[in-house]
Image (cartoon, rainbow over all chains, first blue to last red; front, side, top):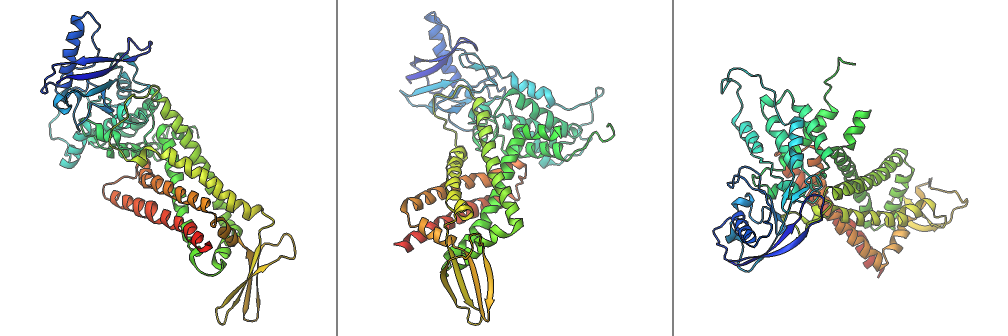
Length: 254
Length: 259
């Protein structure tokens, strides 16, 4: 396969970037998208040029590191995959592929196609945890949890924090990510003690980072490599408003 | 109070304001379309004029009317605030057009809303403003023989300048004198451009509510697998089909009547 790539090149966060066109010749249809970029980069290194900087790690669709906005879609065409799971057979010979970094104010470009997603880490730190006592390992089935709820919580917990939801959203909203992280605990007994404080703290941090609001277009849900559903956003909204309007936790303090 | 302020200043709180004002406007539409169906009764505007008179002279309705105007302004203002915030969240736009599968209406709520806001300004200027401020607006006198149920309509010229309406009876005949808003409807809807404007606006309303009604429930957190299909059904058939269609038929029917 011979392809034309339009790649966003940007030295660092403080310089302006621009598209540079590269030829990707002799690409095997069985290569993953990242392997294709590896081949292009090898050529660039041989020519003494700066290789294209992009994020990647496990290359098996579970780490959430690879990003890339490919021809108008995060992680390229095809549903429920990351960029490392995208194969070149998805494209046709002679096609022009435009590759951009995630575009969002809270995700500044580090270099070329790699963006800084530490905004997600800060949201997680604000409340994406449960408090567990140290000591002996608790008995596995000490607390009875219905299978349905356990599965639902697990589905929410499959979020790998890649940021495709933010990249796909017309408002660069992080609600699918935040709602998944809130839901995975809100659904389980272990998550109850901090449930409402968690919703408030994580939403507050999300707003502080500068992500947009939700218009319920469903682009995030469609592009999520782990198929996290919009139901999570509804649950987050419910928990947040319940926390804000109905909970009175500090009755005895004042 | 500062906690409430913080809540409504959050991204979720601002959307909640959009959802609640939007749903209130939706309930208003049901009343508005229901009342305006009187335009389709062939009675020289008797029912419609009496209805218009009732709306403007019954204090609780007047209070709700001002609440309604406030809701329209708040809904539009928060849409603007949210849009500015959303634009800020993506300072550098994508070069390639987004291809994620989404409903067209959900991505164009701002455009649809702007068309509707412009329409509301024109619509209220034409009917609401004239009804309240136009001294030259005519009056109609409806004489109904209560024994036979026959109504005869004639133009009425008030004896004093501040005359509003009157209901009197002479024997079996009930005499109702009200402002003739119906005549304004007839003259406005005889203008083709006006009819086109109304039909376009109702198209915008349809798409706005197709997304807006069900979206409001999701935003408020009232989302449940069991009720979602019902909300979707009402949002699609009642708010995106029946109501806009009924509204759009009013100018169309009156235009063809005027030919």
